[in-house]
Image 1 (cartoon, helix red, strand yellow):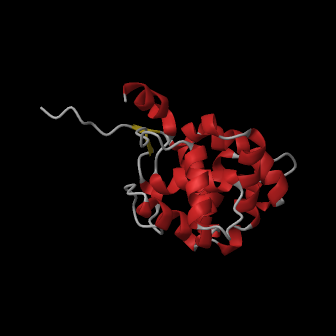
Image 2 (cartoon, rainbow, N blue to C red):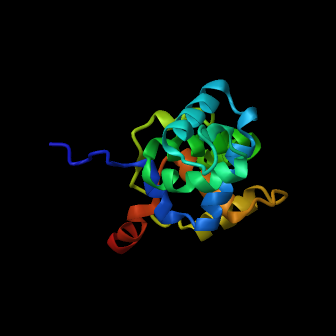
Length: 179
């Protein structure tokens, strides 16, 4: 009997780990840069906005300015796993240098991850298993040692780690207690 089961939680569970201002910032970045995203990502995000986002004064919310659209999209990002998935994948696509560096960083630390350019929005959600002892502070410091010239913002680094590893640190404290 195999007691190892893979557990996923929906992508919108990331909201428990994001500050409100940072969530809005990520959504704003993606919607402001939507023209630089691949066509399928752009279409998926626009389709979700058209279906679920209501911007006062606009019959079609896709036509609204990105700032208004972003603020109106926050609640959809919080409630709809597919919106969170496409926004986060789009965000990673808008930061290809950081994405590659974080992927190389995770690989150097022996984390299991899909290739850097894999479309994680097609996955069923986040894994809940987080490597023991790998707190955000530990990861921040190790990344700074590996890339001393990179002045990445801590929230961006942490989000890229979570996204590329496809993991949320739900069990981090439970693992620390067991060891």
